[in-house]
Image 1 (spheres, rainbow, N blue to C red):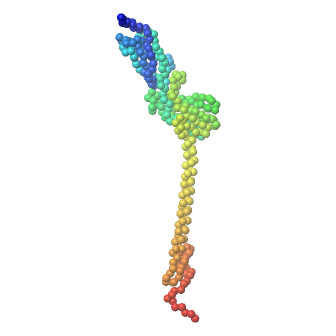
Image 2 (cartoon, one colour):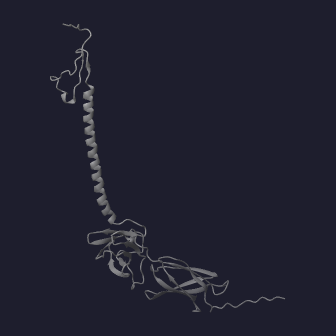
Length: 294
């Protein structure tokens, strides 16, 4: 024999398996299961979202007959902290959890340019890639001295650069730039970090070159230019000497045997161009001239 037993639904039970499916900068997707399997009617849930930073509350109503319910909480603060409570509309037992939204990204292309008595930090505007960021919020800059093991707050700015002075030789520094923290430093953006040593060489996490590399190039380029000029002058001198030697050799080669005079004539390079002073150095005899012997 068998008997069918049907349990009476208990609306005082809390929702089951409440968890976050996905979290973004301004939204969070949460999911839970009904207090009991296969509800036979629509169930009304109350979703309370408490902002732990601003100390504000919002309540949303969700109606569903499904055993599994998914809901998206919108209009959240990037980098915020929230406490989410889900319960039936009759204020039954509740299920809760905490979620943190994704903070704003770090500024891109953080660079250092070295001046005579200070350095300049440069970075790209965060508004170029973050639609939720307003330039009026600004950025804040921190510095960590590894030798002294001290972190200092340098200030904030709404520009895309910041001047840092009074750096000490022999110290290594780390600079961070991030979207300015709100509500007592509880809501901040991700920091961009840049290392700077005592020689003025700045490198970020992507190993980018900094301002001092330009100073090295300013020294190397003129030296290379002077070397090229010196080599050019050397080539010109060698070419002129080669031409002089070639002309001297040509003058010597032009010395020829004269069939009219019956003599071999050699002229030096110094006598070229002076035909009046030309004189045979060696005179021979011709076979067609009779020899008279006294």
